[in-house]
Image 1 (cartoon, helix red, strand yellow):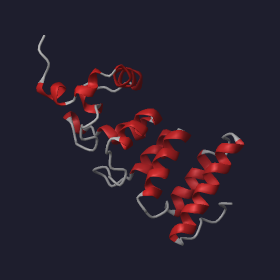
Image 2 (cartoon, one colour):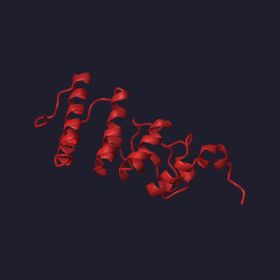
Image 3 (cartoon, helix red, strand yellow):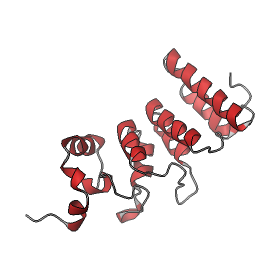
Length: 154
């Protein structure tokens, strides 16, 4: 069976780790869409955007892979949601922190007051270290951008 041109354009798909990551993620379309060199922010069939999907699904390992290979963390959905909002909806701490760390690296503004409250509320029952890391990250982000912390955020 011949390979499609797209697979040939992404020889790294032969990499076993990427194939396993794709299977484990539950990605509903072609594995080629997650290969290094793919446009992770492109709208695919049915309007699905790979990076949006992994943020919303809380797939921290795939988020890390996509960020390392060019995913745009500053992207927004068609209805205006940012990647932090999608990651927050997943309620996956590692996904949220990967997105936050990348946003900070891009000098993006800190989360809105509503997002800060939602972050604090969502992870209030998390392990103490996770909660502390989140609070420190929010403080550092606000300090760097000289933005006020939301009331009730430590």
